[in-house]
Length: 342
Image (cartoon, rainbow, N blue to C red; front, side, top):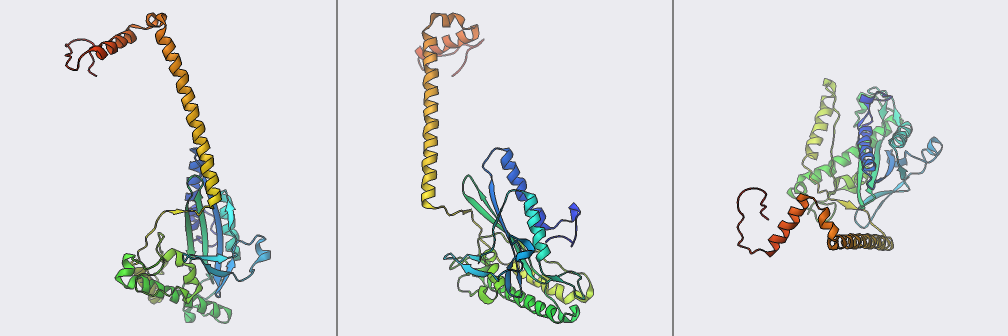
């Protein structure tokens, strides 16, 4: 997701850097075309020992780990993190600086299997809205810590405690995916509400991880899962388990739709009035310009000097137009030179 630890080469950058680059390339193109641009806001958090921590605190390390943030759910079933900082960004450099700052705060540790083992799940969210029409989108880039075999990792003490929380949350995620993919209703995307296949209980509330991922799994999203597997023989069982999980995920179908930002009614009315006034002004300008040139054409047509100033082509066209208006519908055009069928 983030690329190799300490990687600085451009071709080694992770998916999260490439995705944000693509979005800001689009924003730059809109600016070049002089079209209304994008408003981008980002947040970055981790789930560590079942606690949600902000990885983009205003004062960096001085405020980390900060309070354990709580989850909230609105009337539509959308899950949000209360108190999670949303940072408005206007440049790719700012986004990448926030990502690197968050990675420096993320919980990692050394185990027998990995010198820099992730001890938490992270969720980087980029909210994008169009200034012109209010369309809005959200990109969640989730880096899940891998399941851990305690015997192989030789984890003890805090490392063992972290591994148990990681494995427990991944098990809960597996149950959610199983419920979403198990029935024809779940596979077809038919739902009795925004987040549950008809007649199937989906255990989102079994863990904070599944609640955090509910928005990405519940229907209104394009969701992509990538699994990292190890070709070494001693990791055969873990690889098979990961691939089986990926296979179940492939049977979950979502129903994405275009999102629009909720607008305050008073603000919306002000915008309507403003646009109506602009439209009325443009119509007035167009009518004024039309009247001006109409008068000039009428004055020119009434001037005898106008006909003498016409060239042979313009005069021929004018005479043909006049003849055509006086002719009958059954007029025949003789062959040869310059006759025009209208």
